[in-house]
Image (tube, rainbow, N blue to C red; front, top):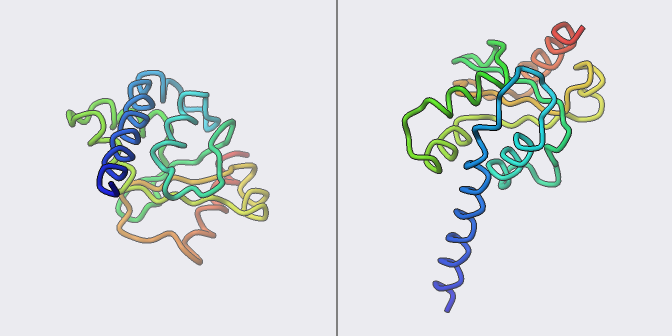
Length: 145
């Protein structure tokens, strides 16, 4: 019985994820850091195991990439990679999410950043904690000004 419930849960979760990723063509159509409804739904689903109570709806998100995680990126770049990866739908979304750090900003960091709610850092070899996280937040204030 437990195996059946677990299997059903995984099946339902993959259907829900596929429903969100099937809307990926409506994501990343601009470089605005403010998420549209489709983008918010996408990130809420893909990062559901790491976001806690955080809801991406209407949020302002910064994007960084690169081995040091300090190269400024954009929402359109993030989704361009996903749309053009050549991987099967659900696989690429899970793969990209595993390679991305989600940094949900505190109220103090949000003020310091110029109003960003979170940062997504893709494919960095370095964890963005402590001083390196503070540097990213301060850089955002310069970008948003």
